[in-house]
Length: 189
Image 1 (cartoon, rainbow, N blue to C red):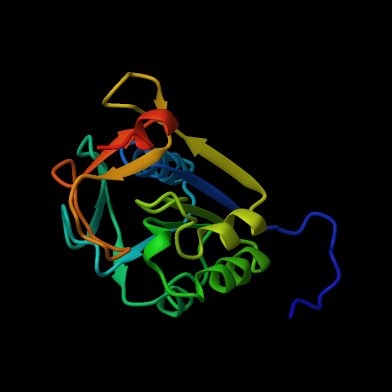
Image 2: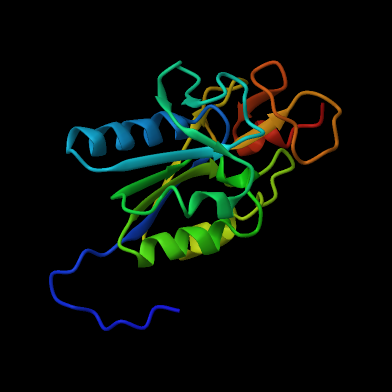
């Protein structure tokens, strides 16, 4: 537990969460913030779950094909050691991490690190996804992004799964998912 008293002028960390549906620009926004931190000569480490190798094994890549080098890790605890002595930590696809991701992000923030986390806030069934609710509750800053509904053109905040898979985690792209608004998501097919 953090026991040191606050000293005026000391470096203080925080947690920023970027959330929304698939195709809303979460990874794009994460990459933008991390590149800006690098331009400011900040020390940056970036992580993603090893299971997400849709586009590249060692990069996070947006749907618009912007990318930045990252370290794939098997679990949240593996982030702590390489994240020592940095200014900013970026974490993509946070919903895929184990239950320790919230604890890890809080530990990093207490060490004075800016932690930027991106992930789906809801799964394909419209339920909170993984540890995202805990990250949202602990975050100092939250950015909710929206896609465009492919059915009607309104803002979309649901990731509609077009296949019959029932597992919560099915990694895919536009072949499996599409963004929908609340109304179109709830239409009987």
